[in-house]
Length: 260
Image (cartoon, rainbow, N blue to C red; front, side, top):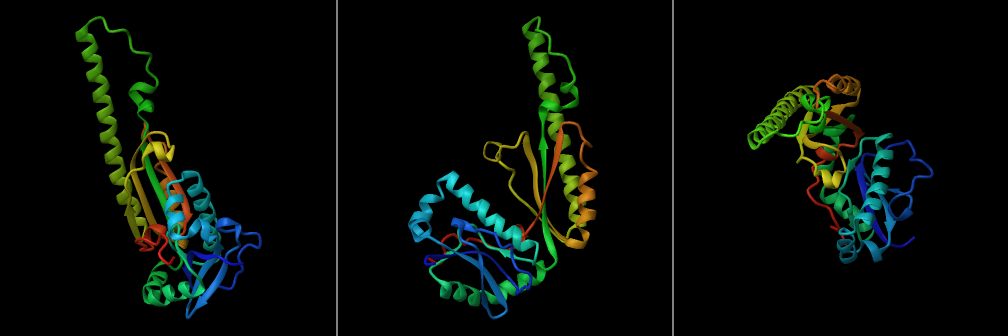
């Protein structure tokens, strides 16, 4: 099959085969491209969609991008079950196998050093959300009475504002303490920008959006630590995601269309 080479991840050689029915981006099954002590996991993608100009245009198409991201994640997830992959950024594309090998050789030392650091480790994501509508002083309260006067209305507004401010303060304190606790259970951590609720579709406002690098052998303990925080603070929701390949710790700056 002709086409450009889409690269999902770099890893060390491994013996366990990938799932036979695994399909990559554009439906092409991933294959292994070996160079020295590294393996790139690649598949063919059509130049009409993944050359530099059409790829740049497609990155503005949310539906197209979602489909590619789902296929990319599926391959990386499959790799995570059989080895420790170093995932590359979405849309890492090269002209041919030679271009992929040239990239691997140029970055061989960095790849090997990072793979050594990530070996036997996985990423867990933890998010904290404020759900103001579930705050303890409003969730079970009866509907507010109609204000009898302008002064009464202002008093009610001040009480609502104070309740909102108190909840945010509790959420910030809770998130700081949780991050300190989880960082103590992990080898490394990353704080990401809070998620935009319009884009994420998650309810509530995101206060903490963090990733933690955890040895596989310590993952059960880490998950139990997170689970103990659930429902601990009314109006505050904790979400755990993973296990993932260590995206947040891979050190990839930008790889979109870098080889085309």
